[in-house]
Image (cartoon, rainbow, N blue to C red; front, side):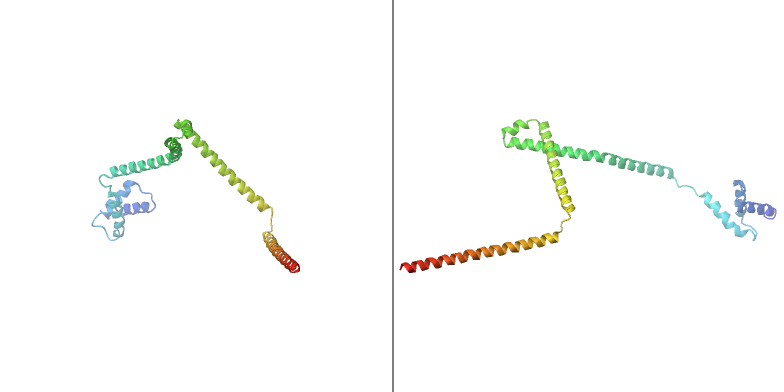
Length: 210
């Protein structure tokens, strides 16, 4: 069989190395090289076609499709949950802010009722009014803080623009402090001298009277 097909097998091998064989021709080559009584000239090619034959016989394990389907459904569910959390995160922050404001207003309402202050009881008898006033107070406080911060930053910016020589200013202040200290010392000494003169004159006057 091998001798009869030598020329044909050579042609198929040439076509196979050139990637020109059809599926049926490749199957013929695999069948041919799977024989046990191959001539020595063909035996080096037997492992190649035996390998391709074995690879084609490999199949998926039982239940593979079902496991793949479950894995895809699980991954899809996980992605959906992640997207849901990302979408509702801003809403959760808004809800938390509203709960904080509502809690603050209700707390003020009940504290004023416990203190039995008629003015506050009349003003915050309605929880909605308490929430509104609390919100307004927080807004005013926030605005005041922001205004103060902006004014401080503007003051710092103006001082920076003046290009003040701080070292020279510190030197002048030190000299002024020294002059002030010297002046105070001189004034104290002058008062002390005046007191001594006055005491001396008084003593002399008493001696003359005696």
